[in-house]
Length: 303
Image 1: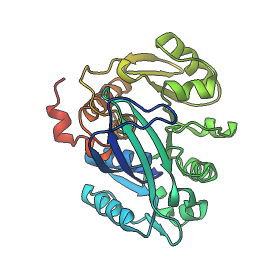
Image 2: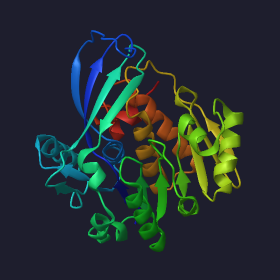
Image 3: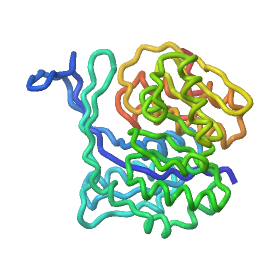
């Protein structure tokens, strides 16, 4: 039983490309406008499903056209959508994104129905927990829901992966429940106080996280790759060199791909290389879920 349960957010991303980001009070004339399905939870679920992972997804959508479009897209990937619910009052989540000519992004999210995903919703999806070996979460849904999910998963002996994005305060007793914690440089700094810039500072941050009780730590370093550490080994996996077009969801693709690789019993080194390649592929295309490679595309990818 190596299926992956993703619990998290679903948004519609509204994207404008621009040469540079505006300063406060400044209006910048942008380029083309795009609308893509997004949200960290949905991005990771779609990434894992497109890479042939067995994926179930728990999220909450509004009863609106954005929710309809999102649900249709999820079904096309072949993931299990039985545990996706709809909120009668709140709209589906929306993200406003600007992307500069370097492929960097600024993002503002209106969470909508994502913030109504509750512990009670998880209790109604008991079968999803029972049928999955891996539980992958992020932080665009309420912390109480994350904590409840972790408690359920721990009791059932599941492997819990938490991508702490966007970074926010977590209860200390959550960390020992985590099989894998996957912050980026900024998020690692938030949880440890270490300014992460390279392997040495990543090691310092990972040491603190391991002392908190996390079993395994991966700190993503953008174009520098990914640093891994646990009680017995560490490694820095380089990222393939590509021309970045849009970095939106690169971290989400990494997390989804990493869970698929681990579910397939790849070694840490194999899994991390594979996830780095998937993330590198994603930054060469616009959008979040639309930038995610299929298994066939990733197999052909030769940066």
